Length: 146
Length: 126
Image 1 (cartoon, chains in turn yellow, brown):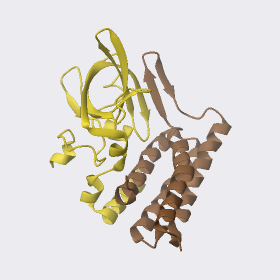
Image 2 (cartoon, one colour; image 1 turned 30 degrees about the horizontal axis):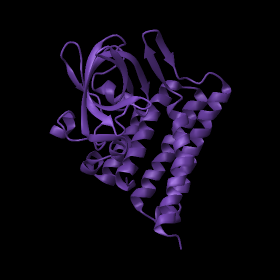
Image 3 (cartoon, helix red, strand yellow; image 1 turned 120 degrees about the vertical axis):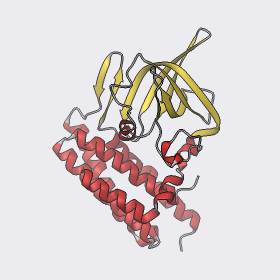
């Protein structure tokens, strides 16, 4: 399986070139607002390890009101490679997610955001997105800094 | 003569009504959801659910042929090459579904997404 994927990855590079492959992806701009950054601080209540995007549900309490944000991440494999896995992100821990709101912004029917990075209780900050999605180059993606 | 608008519509329909549902069948077949109450797997529970994955995998594989037709591909070599990757990934998904191997389907689901992204980055417009 890994051998086949390497062949696919090499094929992508040959077809599109690395810079093209990392440059943009329409999914971000179709769903999220690059001008609506948001910091979400709260307790993890649910994690969905599902392709093509993992989802982290974060319960935010503010002025007596509880809101659950659904935060979209990269593919599960991408998160695992970045050190985010079943052991490091578990229900009950409090995290800070930096990301961008969905274009609706009204939380109807749900509050949805695209996550860029997670800060864990020990202070560790980890990139939780996928490279080349068209999200703003905000410094959260280590591959953009190379 | 197919207009550019009709051409776009044809590709959009292929994606929306054929490839998207087929990809969803594969993506929905592997993974897990964790809450404070525990962990649940997305693994198909019966043969009917496995048949849905097999069907989706076969559609992905055969869509390589549909997308490679000259009227769709316009003989663009990179388009045809990426379409060919759908056959590779679709065949892998089919074999994994026949084995009922959810770990393989989870990995293949990520590969499938990369194939989608590679093409969208080049050809999909907002």
